[in-house]
Image (cartoon, rainbow, N blue to C red; front, side, top):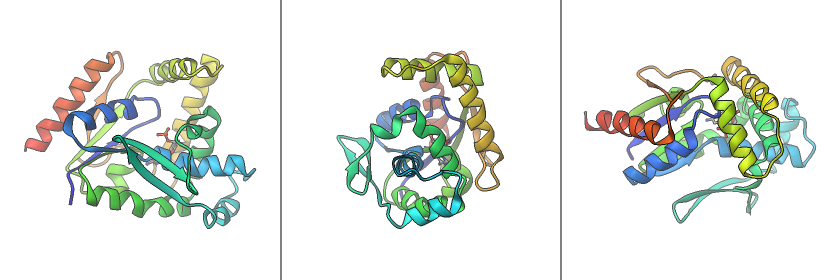
Length: 223
Ligand code: DC
């Protein structure tokens, strides 16, 4: 059994960049579980499957194989043997991922894959339900959050830097809508796990957040 650190929180709280850096410092594997839901979302988008159509998405699962590989320490995600690591970052895929992730069969489909990785490696795993559902016995559980405005600003800047044309107001509206969807769904809703430490990064620089997260995790791992 590996050492397991679960990091959950809303989109744009800086989870993935912080978790990746933290994993590097601790020499753990970083597993971004959002990428798995994004891969199913991408399949739906590419194949004109309505992500709200539960039966349509469930029927598609038998045609989908998702795989994770680590190349130079970086996670790559494969959809039926195609590396889709870049394609799943397209803005449109975010909403598809959020919608398909509300389908219990989709969560079940990805559940064992996540547990297996945590059993075999020391992992920092980030997502929405890692501390609550996937790794309820994680050694450390963090709930990483920041204000919706700050998260929208970060997402906006990230998309601009990738050359995607987006409006800040639209991004803020999307962040709020996605929080709503992820928090209020009946299955595995986004919420702090029992015994989790809440880390709020509003107003922090990246380095300040990383230092805070590193201190929080290492202190708990030493206990
Ligand atoms: O972290 P992200 O933005 O890449 O995640 C995309 C969507 O996937 C997000 O809206 C919620 C869903 N998700 C989930 O339901 N459970 C996870 N463990 C990770 C992501």
